[in-house]
Amino acid sequence: MSRPGYIFLTCPDAELLHNRITEILESNNASDFEKKVYWADDELPSQFWDDLTLQTLFGSSKAIILRRAHTLKVATWKTLDKALSSLSDSSFLFLCLEGKWDKKGAPVPAVLKKRNCWKYAEKQKWFWNSAGLDEKSITGFVNKWSAQNSIIMDNAVKHALTKALPKDARAAKLELDKLELAAGPEKKLLMDHLSLIAFSEEMNFFEFMSSMSQGGDPVEIWRRVLTNHMEKDSMIFMLTASLTREARALWMMLHGEDSSVRLPPFVKKQKAALAQRIGAARIAKIFDIVMEAEIGIKTGNRRPDQALELLVAALTNLFAIQPSNRRR
Image (cartoon, rainbow, N blue to C red; front, side, top):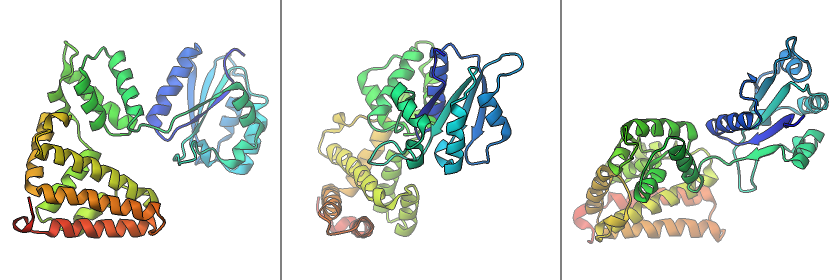
């Protein structure tokens, strides 16, 4: 068999998994394989096992995709391990490990690492890993899209685009589809076109500061922000990173460096107005509050949840200060 019999794909992003499977099938001249998708969350039916090991009546080939394979139970991994030793030549199995990545890297179940199928796949390099889209990989994602669709853009537009796109491949693709239409027959993407993007993370924190600075209900505002983050220990660092980026952009706009803030014109105009409303003293204080939270965690003086509570309290108090009482 010139192609792999099976391959492990470790990635939490369903769209990236789909794209990679398509690429692998194309590179192995298997684009016409019948695709059969199964979910490991459910009890695997007998048809799944038949697809793995039995030759079809008419000799057709199958691409068998097992989604969320990281949820398989120990007993199922044992059975699958045996089945893969007698995998049909007409079957191409994709095992999708879709658990969330952590600091240690790819989330491969401990039970799987003990199985022969995993050890053999490692030896043959039958695997593909991706942590999903982040600040670094989003650039490659955009470059690939522009090359495939012959989209032209200058570096400033590309930089702003990578910052504006959501870090979910499916959502990002939908936004890029809109931009491809906006680029028109010339296929040239302009900064103004980026106003079509539904800004997610950046706009959340822009809206947060804007609402707080205008006397919005702090309980409701914080509820909207915090419900976007599921892991408490990592939430504090997500918040501090986003707040620092936002404060830095506001500071630069307030001090005549707005040309260095690469954002679509309509967003930049809104943020410039916010910077004037908040003022230099409160923007500077945001950096102090963020630093205090991070130092508290890194020195072991505070748990992440304690640092988060103090961060929320400090920012709420900061924005409760009336504009007439703040220093400029």
